[in-house]
Image 1: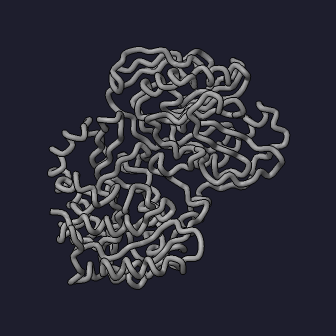
Image 2: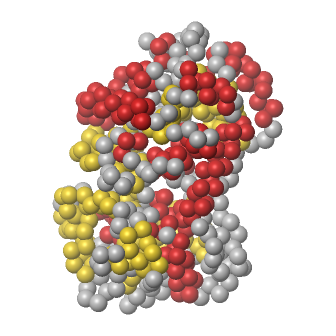
Image 3: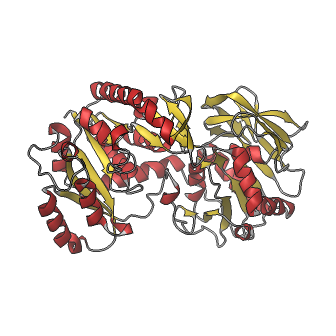
Length: 512
C-alpha cells in the first residue's frame, strides 16, 4: 500500500493529534512503513529531535507511534506563541525570527513550497504518510494563505477525513458546516467523517449519521468512544479538564495522596513534563490560577514558559509569587523546570526574550540567569543520586552565576553541574533546564520519595514499578485498538491507497 491521508478537525481539540497517532500505530502494527506529518503546528509544547531541531510534541508522539525517532521532517513549521499578537517561528527545526499574524501571511508562500517538498520527500521514503491538519480546515478568513489544511491537501491531492468532538455538542452541525463552507475544489477531497469522544450507546447516533450521509454524500467512517487515560501530550489548554487536573488520578497504593500544584502560566510551555508525575498512582497534579489553590499542596512545580520574565510578572500580579514564597517558607518543596527554574533565581538578565534587562527573580535558588542570543538545543544525559536521567533542552537562559557549594540536581555525563538541589532554606528547591527529565523512572521516584519524606506523608507509598515509556506505549496501543475496532478500516485503506472518490457531491453554499 502506498498513499497519504489528511486528518482534519471540525474544531481545535477535536482529537486530530491522537487520531493521527492511532492510525499511525494501527498501520505500523501491520508492518506498514508509516510516518506522521504536520505542515504547521502552533504549540509551546516542543521536543528536540536527534537531528538537533525543534518540533511539536504531538508529532514526536506520532513518530513514537510509528516506531520512529522524532525528526524535523515530520513538522517543518512550528509557531510558538509568545504573546497574543506575536509568535516565534521555527522552520525545519531552527529559529527563524518572530512573526505577527499579519507578517506571517507574507512568508507563507515560501513556506508552502517548503512543506510540499518535505511531504514529497516523506512520501518517497515511506509507504504511507498520515498528515494532521491545524485547527479547522474551514477557517475561511485564512484559507487564501493556508499551508496546513486544504491549502496542503489540494496541491498534494490528499484525501481528507474530518473528525468532530461530540462531547462538546453540535457535532452534526460542525461536520456539515465544515464541509459546506469549503470551496468546490476543497470539498472534492473531503471523503468522510469521524465522530470522536462519544459516551453511551452508539446506536443512538444512527438517525443523525444517516441524515448526514444523505445530506453530504460522505460516509461516517466510525464513532470513537470516550476513553479515559488518553491524555498524554496535550497541545493546548483546551485539552485539560475544567478543574485543571492532569491525567486521571489513579488511587494511591497507600492511604495518602501526594498533591502537586502547578501555576497555570499564561505562556507555559512543555507542561507535558508533568505527565510522568500524573501517571503515578496516588499523585494528583493540578494546574492552578489562584494563591489559595497552593494551600494544601505538598509540592509546587513551576513549569516551562515561552516568556519567563512576563510570566514571572503575572505570578506577582496574581499573588501566586507570594504564595510560592510562603509555600517555601513553610518548609515545603518546590521544583522549577526550564523557565520555572529561571524564575527561582536571584536575578534574570533578559535582553533577548522580553528585552526588559535585569529583573529580580523569586530568589529561592542561589543562581543568576542571563539570556543568550543563541538558543540551547540538546538531548543531554546524566545521573542524579545514582539514577540515569535523560532530557532535552530548549532555552535561551543560562546559569551564569551560582553560590559556591550548591549541589546540582543532575550531574551530566561529561561531569557538568545541571540545575540545583538547594536545601539550606526552609524547603528544598529543585531546578533544572532539562525538559523530560521526570520521564526517567528512577529519577522521578527519588523526587517523590524525597517530597513524601519532607512532607511526612507516612501513608504515601511511592509506586515501585511505574514505567513511563510503557504507559505511553500502552496508550498508543489503546489508540490503535480504537481505530481497529470502531473505524471502517477497509474504507480508510481505500482512501489512503486510491485517494478521494470521484464525483462526490458539492454542498451549498460553498466558499467563493
